[in-house]
Amino acid sequence: MNKPLNEYSGWIWMNGKFLEWKKAKIHLLSHTLHYGSGVFEGARAYGGRIFKKTQHHQRLHDSAAMLGFKIPYSIGKLNKAAEDLLERNKLENAYLRPIAWYGAEELNVASNNNSVNVAIAAWEWKSYFKPETTGLKLMWSDWIRPAPTMAPVHAKANGLYLIGTLSKNKAEHQGYDDALMLDYRGYIAECTSSNIFMVKNHVLYTPIADCFLNGITRQTIIELAHSHNIPCIEKYIMPSDILTADELFVTGSAIEVKPIIKIGETQFNIGRITKHMMREYLKLVKAKELEPPNE
Ligand SMILES: Cc1ncc(COP(=O)(O)O)c(C=O)c1O
Image 1 (cartoon, rainbow, N blue to C red):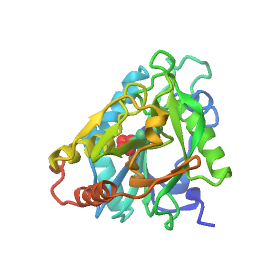
Image 2 (image 1 turned 135 degrees about the vertical axis):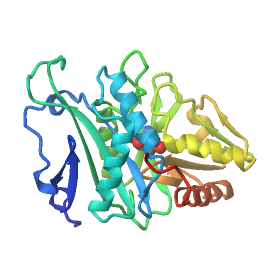
Image 3 (image 1 turned 180 degrees about the vertical axis):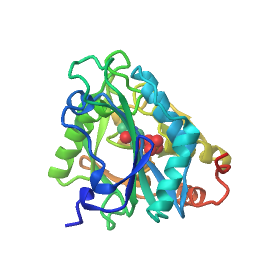
């Protein structure tokens, strides 16, 4: 059993200050704990550099705006806090978790009278799945991604992860790595923490991100495909389309690019385009000249 995350040591940036790991706590009556009203991010650092940190902190701001609140730190300030945090914790290859939540001033479904709190934690990162996992086995989720009129589906909001947790719990119990969700129309949506791509006849396809997170890795892969002359088309995809794909993979900041080798009972090979995208993505995240330094 790995050491529990809450027993790590180091520093956590919280509301503008660096706190010792075990002292970074919130009150039991925090609004977000009761009502799932927060937003968060998941970013990765490679060789001490945070990949697309500005985009992640921009998305934290955008997610908060979709929930009707403002993050009280600028994107530049969050970038600097994240970088200082890595340095203080002497981290090179890390996962970063920025989060914003409502405090415990009042317990009411409305959050208008609660403070907005922000923290960033970072820790050494090995692999999202077991290191021996070469490809993912997915089960079909019992839950569907809701319509944009049912939930703020484009925000990376805590509350939206409930169906992900239920789906991934069941998948793990049944010996799968993760679950694949359909959307409210029956189209393929995404996995519990990643977007999906399929290859058919040398063309890449990915679902239109109109009711789920348009992942930063998803956007990076679309750009990479175009720059490598691999046609990449965003379209609505039916489950029957996915099951006849030549290759499949998922993308996400934590997962990177990972092949899918099974959905339900259907098996898939790890193909040439998947291997190419895995290699090119790793090259890109490890490149030295990604973003200008903070001003
Ligand atoms: C539900 C969900 N979809 C997709 C993604 C992929 O997003 P990104 O590539 O920005 O990490 C994530 C991870 O953040 C996620 O949690």
